[in-house]
Image 1 (tube, rainbow, N blue to C red):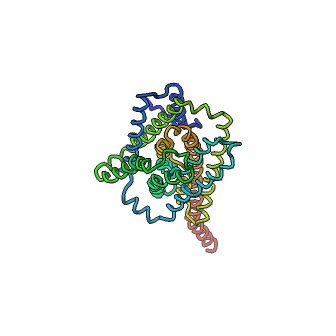
Image 2: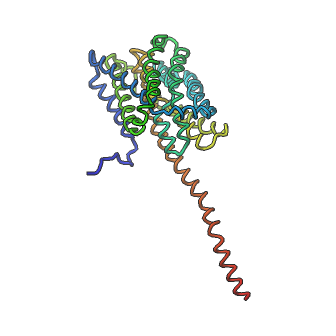
Image 3: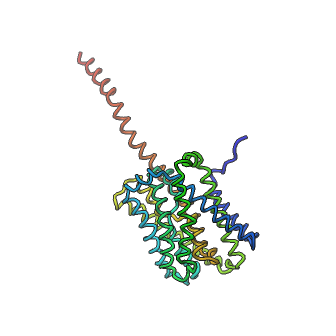
Length: 355
């Protein structure tokens, strides 16, 4: 029997349908009481295991080699933790006409979250960019974000991130950084196994996010938070996020060109510098926002799906451009290679006529 595959003509990623289904499940059957505690503990463990696998997969040599390309990583970090937050602060003028204050707080929070790892690598590879740079850029962003994101949240969100404290920072470090470091330390023994089973990492990545989304949205349903979001406000949020993504995609691509990066590096910068991590953002939000985390992560979840769909289209276009460029380079070589026989035949014919 042939293995069932998702039709290529379908415009929606099946994972997006799974996310929507998870939200629907949380709306119909939210976790309550003991079930909520179990789901919360399971999601925390899943995210910790995910970052453990990230640490086990990242080669220490790759990380050290990546440090040599410091200009690229500084550019990605600047886009992630400087340009993004500035655009988020600029969106304050949209309150209350377009966005409600809680939705704006969630939008501002998503601008503070670190970049992705998995999708940055996948799209950079698809577009024929600098994959090692994307691996290091995404990993560095996630590690830096463990400390920078809570500090930025305390600075720009103030009392809105009521859960922020030294204790919350410790919780985030224990959940994300400690497992990552543990994975690095054990890489010598398990790195080969993790590398050979990349699909396991992908399943854990997506499964852990689904579990955290279910936990967060269940809490929102139990507390009645979703009654605060009207369809008009939701449409306004989507429009604002579409503009935010378009601006960041343009800035990372043309800004990298202005900084004289080559095409492969520009691809890595665009995909690593324009995206936000749902895997890192969800647990951080649950710690920083506490009971209000469900509404705070709504903008992040919507932005995450939007960036996946848009970047998939861009990656395919970049790959097509690379193939076209390679064809143009090969064509003159073929003409040049066929020229000598033609000249030889002409010379022979001329010689014959003169003889």
